[in-house]
Length: 249
Image (cartoon, rainbow, N blue to C red; front, side, top):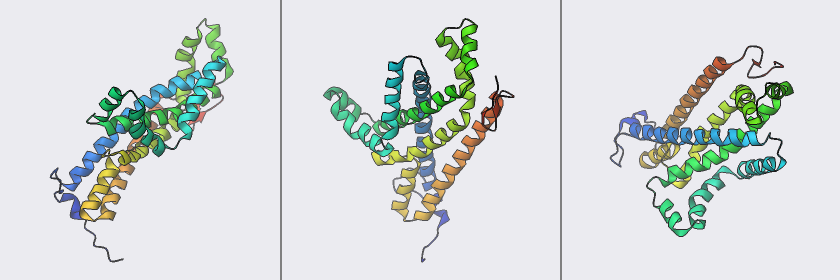
């Protein structure tokens, strides 16, 4: 292969005058982290709410929650991204749709909403599975103490289930960081989009995407390390073993 390697390209000035190519990558990383973290907070809030509803004794609430999960989990993420960005403003009232399209950061808002709803459906499944994995005595103990159903969930079931599902939640957090790259299709200049821009300007395709790959790996290793520390810190001896639930009480 007759390819001219040039690892010094990152210190060259980018044609858009925004700084060096390395600055371009850092800018993309900032957008990636901002999108991922904001969408993750949204996904956690919705996921815990929907996942809890899926375990309630009310069958109609369970059906609605299951419908939510199936809707957002079974449509490909790329299709959802296009629907949120191109279709949603057109089906809303014209004034609202025009206001959304006029937002200076419309791709960012769209990416956060899309990733948040998509990932929340996956988190909801983890939460409901974590609650279902708890011994039945946990719920009964809350009732025996005189707690209401919401109090039983708040003080007994959700804290324990949260510990059980920390490992799969780590995987979902890693996924949302990686899935943020899909937002380049709607114009969000995150890390992958910046790497592609470097490749188009400099024709150094291997250097550009090698750097982006390395950054993704470092970020995800950092996420794994942080979540592992949190998992060890909140673990209950005799209940959490090897990232899963034992038969504790």
